[in-house]
Image 1: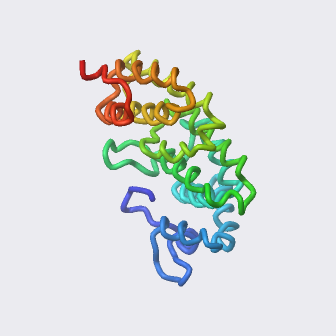
Image 2: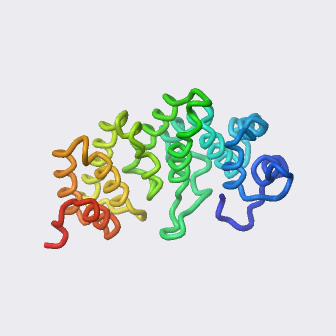
Length: 237
């Protein structure tokens, strides 16, 4: 949901995402969730049209992408992949901000949509496309804020398919922290979540990565994740 309280959806978007299936005003998150029972079919075409329209309101395009991706739609996943290919050039960057750091969190919402679309992929026949959308987001996790939305990319089937991508993202992110390239969002937390997701399948790498991340002063939230998962206690020394 766009954070600017002055923003108002146009009548088309209001009908598609701000009106429930009984015709009453509703929050987009509730509409998206309710549509999983089949209502998505009657709203997909309109949202896809908004998403494809480069002249449409950026906030409307962002919300349309979140909805379609949540419904495991091909155009939603394809748009996530495209967005991750050029994250700094997106028209909808800045349409949503997190409440703690006041930084863009649009990719965090996309990560949530990709992860939580899991239950829809069999019905839609888009399991492979979901994996590729997740892979695209993982590959830019050292560049954009996912925060705890990163957890939504860490279902077993995604971790198994994207293990090398997770390793590469963690290694790049740790190098960034070591080099002193601090960001205005919590990169350390994202890296810790990725490391923990690989703790069983890549034990040697994960143990080393935990120590390297701990030594890079990643922040309290990251350190808490590492220690609560049985990781390194270097930071206590």
